[in-house]
Image (cartoon, rainbow, N blue to C red; front, side, top):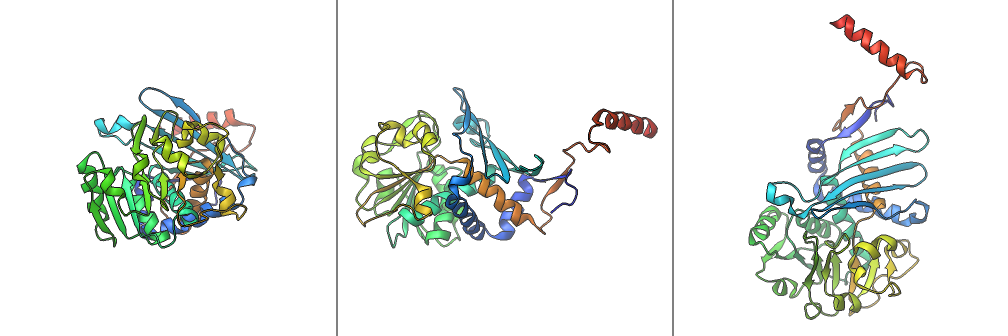
Length: 352
């Protein structure tokens, strides 16, 4: 993409938005799903570790690293649910992709928008294997920043065209419905979560509060439903009543992380769970019958960010939608870093 290896391409928020809209959101999501699936099929090649978190009363800051041996990627991401009170995002992120042979970064990018896209793409990918056949209606409980991305990913990948929306804040529901107008959905704004799940084949929960909450109670979940639980993504934060989790066939990304952060933190460690990568790679079954309740206990994992970084790198080619960062020192003699500094000082003196 850029011949000078000392110049690193950087994708700003503005360029990310332009890239997504030029590509088309649904196409972007569909292609991103394919990259995530590809990496899930080679899951065993990756270095894996639970994300490294610094928790405070206000929220959490995390690093999410992984490598396939050829490329290394990481994401810096925060989760601060009360940021909206001061006009800030609850989640912001940036990421880096690097060449393991040299250690040189090959891409730096905003990942606030990209994370929203990869989260939705991962949800839709999981639902390909877990949702009931013929599903066309999804309830979304929690209509904040992630909700539209989830809706569009499920439309692009599964053909979902009916949405039932609910949020504690009616203004959030109105915002979501307004943003999705014109995308081919039949949208119902609901007054209660019970109303939202009525008739839904898929239930997506994506709330922001950093606390144990009961968004779905046991009597709200009938046979045959697929639950896409997105909001429970840190210790002490859940969205489903324990009885709902116990009734479900549970699918997770990386168990050592999900046991700490997911809905399954409510369960004993010997409770049976399924790893999603085994389903994607054909080593295990997904949904087995029409009456089964399936639960994707989504907390987000570094390999999904790696897939998103790979996809972004490939999609950038020929677009010009990046800036060139003079990030890496490039002395004439690799061992003479100080000499480069001295020459820079002399150059400045000449200019002055």
